[in-house]
Image (cartoon, rainbow, N blue to C red; front, side):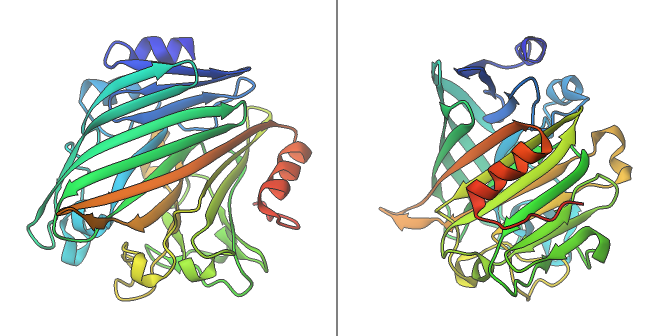
Length: 332
């Protein structure tokens, strides 16, 4: 953690949050949580070419970041064909300042901007992010965006994770869940649909993306997604959970590239492919309720928690069971 803070400190202000033996590194540039030190293991992926990313003002530093959705509108040069994907620098890293830091809490404020290429409208949002380490194994994130924009958008949280042995994403669902294959059919050996969860393989060996519909969540408006893997001889659990999830397809804004007129997911997971070289990673993602109009502006709010554990396989799976109520999780 010290070496990482020293490196990023040459390019950005930082804050270290501490609670017991846990330390979290918050980066002003991009307003992201870059690392969590849990028993010496960071469950978040950090780009191995981090210094190059920072030098070139790129977006892919790693960690937990905030984007806006729908992806089709803001991240494609030709949205009608889903062609020319890029990340606008005005969205990420955007322009943020670390405005408050204390031992267990950090607040960042700034601006995110983007052109909606489906309509020609420009989104300009004032954003406030708060990270609070409330326990050694639990962190709360609160995001607020007040935007000038006539269309619909929602906040989108993405945690990048390191592909590890047995790397598996777990999404608790109802029986009969119908996963959304965002980029095309996910091979059967990478996806399992069980009575109470969907499991998805993370190994950085094939590009594919999973979506889970709001209608398949166990409780309306409540969503959770977990990542379990063995990293460096230790097992880790990273779980994201919110009570601000979309409740229906009408509140879910991100269409699938494979079938733009089909169902949409509010919980998503991405697996990169070998073409990324050493920069391969996985993601666990939450989308939140759409922004609402207040006083002539669009206001979006999201609150979610991260639960993180490092230990033996048995300890990690027992904690996953306690947090989600799953009977037995499927691991790849």
